[in-house]
Length: 113
Length: 117
Image (cartoon, rainbow over all chains, first blue to last red; front, side, top):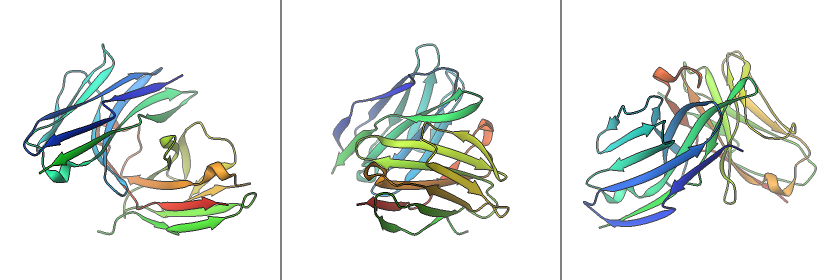
């Protein structure tokens, strides 16, 4: 069964800290890995990663994929209270002639002032 | 540019009934994906439509179906509602389908909160 596991489940840090969120996966026919940020509303798309070792960056957020070890990390530097959210990881995999997305349970990040 | 809109925002239905949810993508976006979010199961992928064709499908029973119209608006239908179908249903639109990974970026709507009693 396809599986995506995120760790830690929750994390509390202080403003200015750097955090690393983890996403590991076991799926058949991997295609890509996606990161989302979800506050008290709909998710916001952050990154889609398809190649190992190539960092994607957007401001203070960056992410990298390791297809050999089957994991990805999401880094947030100089955290701000506005970074408080649930961060979701999803893996796109091919099954039965079509793609599907399998989501992890998310990491809840709380950034205190 | 208007964002993704979903109607209705809230809905209460009774077990056994059916429901239709609507999603209007961002202008110019031709791909619409649907998701179910519950506290227990988290976010789950339902299906993706592109150019009026279902491109991808998650592991949901046949009671969950969808369609897309020529203007890219999409509807999702759930028949014979069960208590476990109570959830937030999200749709997201993108310019290109999921398989075009080099330029994939999606935008979510606010969701429809469905309660089944």
